[in-house]
Length: 171
Image 1 (tube, helix red, strand yellow):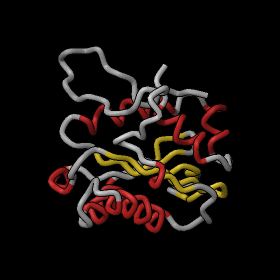
Image 2: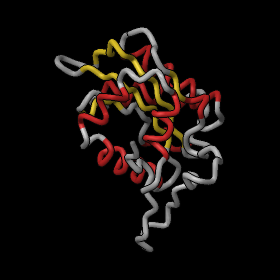
Image 3: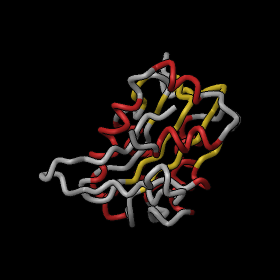
């Protein structure tokens, strides 16, 4: 199952490069590392889920610790729940100065996390995008969630590699 989450963009106007591996290279992605994928987590409130997603980004050297506060502030302004069981907590504005390099974290909550009335996230994807990469990551994620059935399979998989491959495969 390949979603091609980060597709190579041939548009010369967009200079943000996707730094994910070739499927056959065996090299781990620079944007998503296996340590940043947690599966089978127990449900928590959305604030704790955002903190955990942010802490993974901090621990992997993508962001400064202050970025977590910016992620929570962003959620207070407007929900980061994007539908189909996925939330994408991220910081905006001044938080850009707290991003060291682009990266994502993925936390699977099989029982879900409430992000608002009728908004249950089973995958919480923390995002830190450097420069224009932030918009590219969000665009790719929006395309990714279109296949509802395939995405739902990721809500309960016990195979961390399925999540990794779904978010890093190329078509």
